[in-house]
Image (cartoon, rainbow, N blue to C red; front, side, top):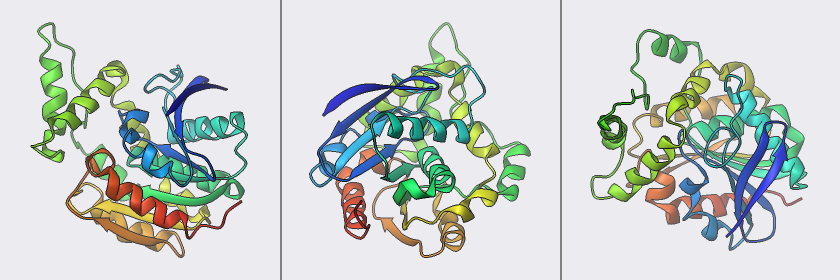
Length: 265
């Protein structure tokens, strides 16, 4: 795997790539980094040029000072494609990354050969109302002198992660600490996004992935299928929210099978 940095309107964006061939851009969930795809990259890289980026503000990418939004993240992804000379890509996004990928597909449809949205919530007025009515934060914690906020980060996510894989939670907490002062902003950006106004502009062939244990996003699969004509769905068995790094072989296999159905060029 090769690391690199690209200049964008938001500063330098960090990315990691593996393989050669048709480009596939992988977008992570909040508050992760390219590391979410660490085990997927070499698998997809056997058949394609797999590129995992750190969304602006996360990982080793520059941190925009302005309020973060899905539109800002999407512009960062397009800027990376411009910097790498990628005229047309297949996008793969997980949770927040899926929402970003769908916005890229809606804003520059001629540049998106295919779209894979994994664990994507359907963000509409009803969801925004539920969030506004008092849904608790997902990752936000208050710094404590005794380090108790580290345990809080762990406990917030533990119900969604397999109990026998503490290494997965360690990776999430490490990424979260890198953006601890703005750790909730990616989720807030998702919940402000008016997906119902944008998703209809997606024209690329689309695969809707979701782990069978992902109770957060699985209920939204049918709404996404209804919103994107021709989209197809696949459920990944035995995994949930952390499907990318929990079952990388299943995730990569689903992506590669989809890529074989996407026209090249």
